[in-house]
Length: 145
Ligand SMILES: [Zn+2]
Image 1 (cartoon, rainbow, N blue to C red):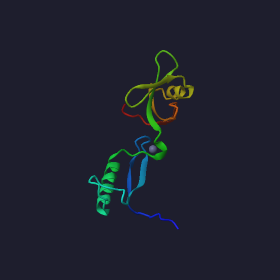
Image 2 (image 1 turned 180 degrees about the vertical axis):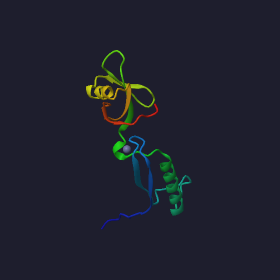
Image 3 (image 1 turned 120 degrees about the vertical axis):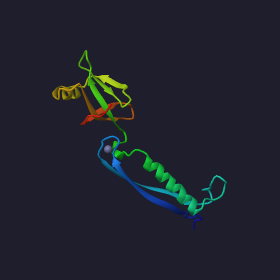
Image 4 (image 1 turned 45 degrees about the horizontal axis):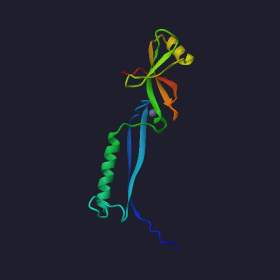
């Protein structure tokens, strides 16, 4: 015998779609927004939230979520970078969207790609790992930074 009570859950499942902020491809996300109706889930006056209050809050959460940029889950740790050849050596310079150099060094592979397309700069999707290392991955079309 257990005394656990299963609180009833209010939930709304929402969907949003658009171009992914990283890879630019179509992205569709579905997310369930929920709260439970329980004595500890109180409003700012200290009263237990009603079903209606919860529904209203969930709708506000959904509006906020829909207002934010859309990114594939697999793209979340990725960024778009600009890569340029250094003027005085064979290094490449990696810039982020704020035009800050986030890395300078040798990458023969990327350098060759720049040389082959005879371009001074190119844009790539890069992955940033937890240690802060950056891996330049797929070349993408030119961006405006
Ligand atoms: Zn993406």
